[in-house]
Length: 507
Image (tube, rainbow, N blue to C red; front, side, top):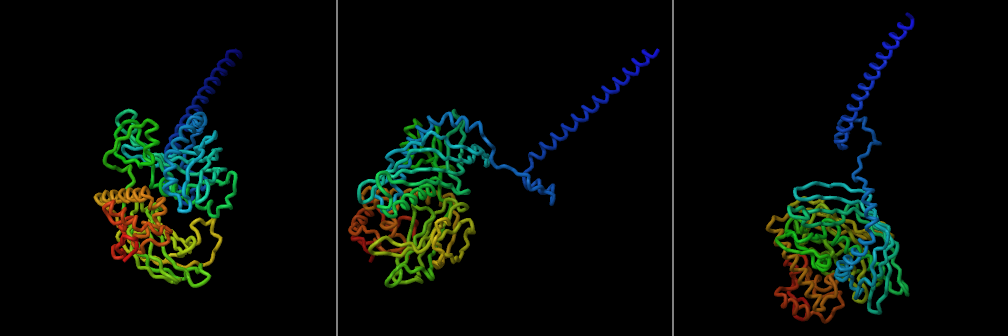
């Protein structure tokens, strides 16, 4: 009897235990499902939504990473890099060498690659984010880091023999924007747009070392090379400027800059050109700048006072300048210039004040940058800006007061028709400058500041260029192009223009 009762009690206890365990497991399963649902809901919330829910109890340790890690992509890139490096070295040389020639300063007569190899260390992509999704486009931002071992040697020639300069310890920190323009035909991508985002600012660090010589033998050479690299990055690669590469033989509504054509064709791509579309960088508005005056400028002369003038630009390649005011530290210009703007939210107006030197190189009195995002369309704004010794805060050594500059600025947003007209004028200006360069009147685009560009808005003729007898050449070139050279570079106000005589002087 005891045995039977014990078995019954044991079976009852076992059944009860199993029922309790099943209920507990169901409870845990329900809780897990509930937590998973809650986590999924929280995962769809952004920072602002979470702050609204938590109010003052929002935990500061919670973070929302903007970039997703792609370790798998870095592994594949490391395997592919030996092949990518060889192909990319060729493309970079074909596309960058014309830019070096176009942007090189007056003091350098030739700037080319004598050796270019990207090395064996692949770049590292710290993360990728999908910035926005538009119909027909995929927009991706890549957080790129590269501390490689490239072998880059520049052949730099001044008035003397060519000097090989090696770029060592190259480090690149930037965010690359890649836009894929989608198409219905294979390979489903009609074009790829590549640019460096302006924020955070691209950081390119390197060291220059002369091979078989010393950089001290050529004073200022290192600064000229660095300025050339900075100008190329900011004026051609940094957003809103971009590189547009067509893929395969799919028709795409873009125009590709001439310096990329050779590299694209070497890759076997078929390029077809149609009417420009949104991929193309086009002027979005016009910035009218009146340079009124400057006050309390720094005196750079041992005898007398500085002879100041102002250089202003939104893009380096479209610089304009004022007339020179002799022997005055509080000069007045009252000159008006029109500058095209491609992207008001990211671009800036840069003003550089120089002291005119008839013998040596013009000395910089100060520089200032004004962000165009602060402007409201169709509203005139008066500005008084403090001049600095350099825009790079790391290079600011002289913290003495360099005076102020007073401006009037007005921004006008283009209509679609005005955009097309401004773009066509911009292309004509580039072709005109190319003609001047081929004719030997200017040696590079930067030289236009001293030659052709000094004719814009100032009417000062050929000053400070050291070109001397090329005035007649410019007069002939202007007739050859069917237009006066003084119409170039930023549509300056006609009231500031003076007719240019055949000998290059202003009447």
